[in-house]
Length: 164
Image 1 (cartoon, rainbow, N blue to C red):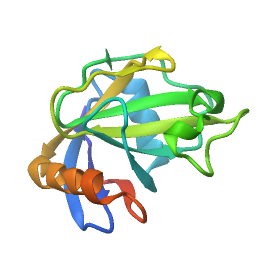
Image 2 (cartoon, rainbow, N blue to C red):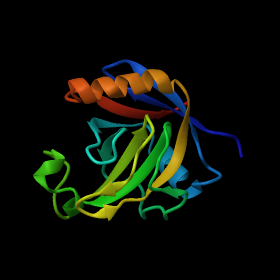
Image 3 (cartoon, rainbow, N blue to C red):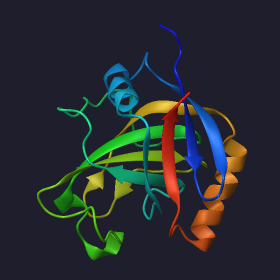
Image 4 (spheres, rainbow, N blue to C red):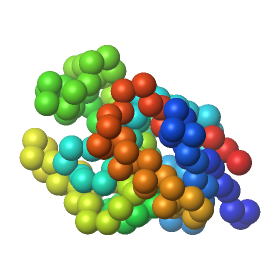
């Protein structure tokens, strides 16, 4: 199979990176994400996992992918897929104001930009993610922008994914 690549960007900050889809390790997830592209949404910085940014989307595939290529310790450059019921994220501590409510399902597409991440949430326990892509170009600049997002705020910023 030919390798497939996407662009991952923080739109307002004008920073982009190139990522390779891991079709050999997470074929169902890669196919679902690829078919849904382009995707963009409000970016959030993780509270629990440490060095992670993500955007939330309505489900874009009829059935959720199986837990293929799972991790609870993502490394810098990993792109992960999570699916959550709205009730799992509905406490005010998470800071969501629109998308999250009981009766909904949300897809969380995340980028990990630095080391020492652990997907352990005090509310629900271990949260394994599906590693479906890896950043192959531009991670240092994107990591710098992610740190700026952490220090200076995410309001108004979009995380975008598009096919290359």
